[in-house]
Image (cartoon, rainbow, N blue to C red; front, side, top):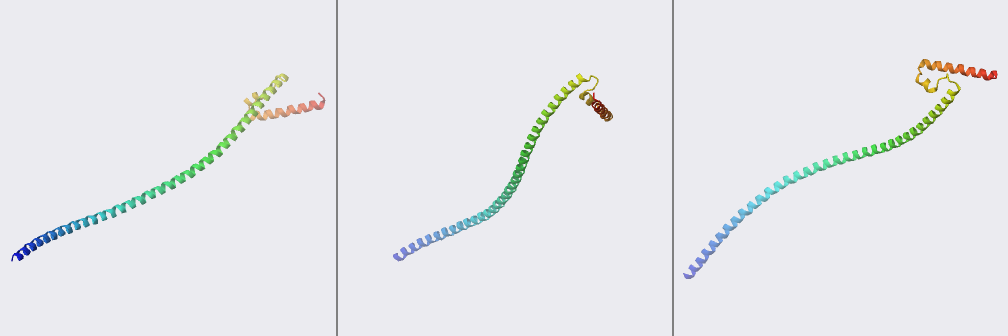
Length: 164
């Protein structure tokens, strides 16, 4: 009986430990289920976040591509404008050189005209100078000047032919 009692008390102790272990395992299973549930929720959230990140990444890539295309287009237009500006610079430089040359030519012609007018005034006081004629030129006076010049040339030719 003593033995039985000892065994019985050991069995009770073992049963109580077993029940505690079952209780602990049940609690652990409950905790494991909770952890599993949380992991599932996080996985769902991660999938949503992943989809959002992918969508935003694609949107940013499209924006970047669009900007890159725009920058490329702008660069080609800028290069075209630069080349046209270089051509224009060359043309302006050429025009400036031509203008300078023409300016020198006009100055030389004016000097010659002034000298010729001085000589003409000393020869014939009644005849008008070129600058005086140009100031008063109208279409009708232009015809008169032409006719006067023809008459003068004819008289000069006659004078030369007559031996004067």
